[in-house]
Image (tube, rainbow, N blue to C red):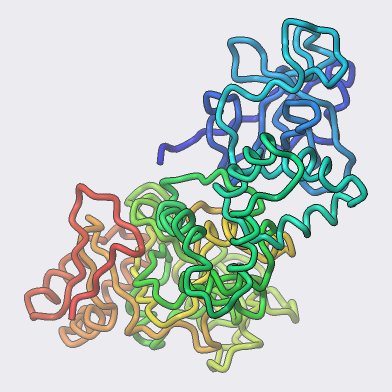
Length: 497
């Protein structure tokens, strides 16, 4: 997926913003937005956004009554905003008041003879547009006494797939008086727990999306999918796909082969402690226990850990080891007598931590980051992209995820991740050896401590770790190979025996 550079859009004056000030999105929220497609729409996790000319970017939803998109508050706190119309020959949009040439599709009784009443869009409907039109048009005509919320629940009870929503809209447009027989039959079948075919249509549409969405090679246009079927049906369907639901209401899997992580901790530290502990910047939220973040993308971990591209976080380098409860001080700094630990994990850990204060830091000059592959088989892995696709309602409850793309969270016990699950990449990112094998070989040859000390002092000695991985391979120990020329992802990892 190509990198997208996001820059601040010009802020319109109050006179030209046409009431969009409250709806305009902060540029920081636009990081993962796709460029506008041929319809002038930008998508992220299935939601549609548009660039308003000379104003900014706003969230939109299709309004069937107006026949176009309407500005909405992403957080559902404001009433619907103005209708927008595409600027001719551009990817930008403008409100109706700024674009008198454009107008909503005529309603019944309009005298304009050039455009037929309720002219359909020339492009095929997306599933989201079909659902919107079903709720605001077709079902409203069939059941005029129902509230909008009642129509939502009525449609959910049918447990229709996205393509079935499109089909239903087409059928009700042709015959608006009665639900089609196929929909009624599907309704009954979806409620029968003993019917092995009740998920077939949905699985045919959703399952092919999972890996591409997880890997960031596809941006699905599904919006609020988890709100379009009943919770009972959804949970049974997700179980069929291999997902479980944790105490945070987030979906997780236990069959992810491995994940990638860039980290300033040396393999010797992880080996000596026998584990990788969670870090102070990873609050609880989406996982059952304390999370450790990682990425599904080999390309991203190369970007994080490649030589000269990213320095270690200075805050982490204030700890001489992951067992320090309090940060140290650089030479010449004054003492810090704060009674609070900066490590919010320390009080919950059953690992004995060092409570010394004001020790002199030894690694504050470290210049590079290590890259690891983590064996996550049989571990709880919460995947960001899939929760956005299949479980957005839970994420709207403020479940925490890092801001990086293609993130996953590993739920760890209080003891962290065992070092036997950790593999160290060489500087080419094409080979990885077990941390335990690398450190044991180094220490048996009496060079391990010197290598680590040089790293901590600021020497760029990645080649020494490469030499250790070479020695591990020559000793017949397992080596994970990820040859260049391919974009590797979590599910591509096949662990050596």
